[in-house]
Length: 203
Image (cartoon, rainbow, N blue to C red; front, side):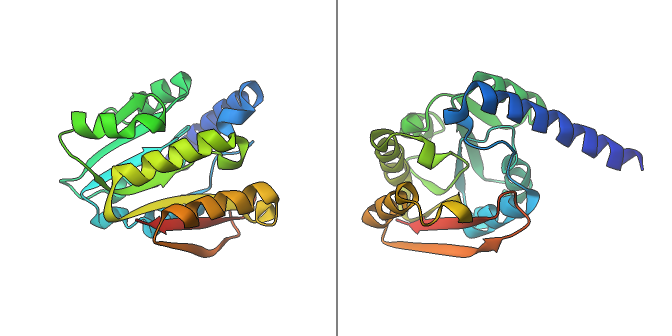
């Protein structure tokens, strides 16, 4: 019973932090609630994180996807995350002291790959609120992802089912199709609030 109560308290603290940041910076956070464990698992699976040697996370937020990603990493994997919200970075560094979180825009991913002694990454997972961004920022971030990935590398993010027909969501998916050699969509994750689909681009 004690671990269960502790887990609930931990999730509650992160949920409140997420809500606070959403109210203060809705364009940076993008959702009232963090992603579910079920959605995080599909993102990690779709990006083939367990097989990847170098993994980068865009916009980990309070760590909803990170908590599924880190245990899935192979022992010799290189991993770091890019997060622009300083409060989230501090929270994540406390929670995962052995992992690397850079307080910077994902646009600068290649800079940190070089610092890590690698040229490319095998997988990028993203929790960024894409449709909240301006089109130029979307394009800069997607270009950064494309340039950071090795040939054949995977980029996995998610979109809410309710937004799929919206022009902003359609434009975003078209941007993915224009950059990646193949784009696929997962099954619907109904246990996420709201329900979501993972979109994956292969370089």
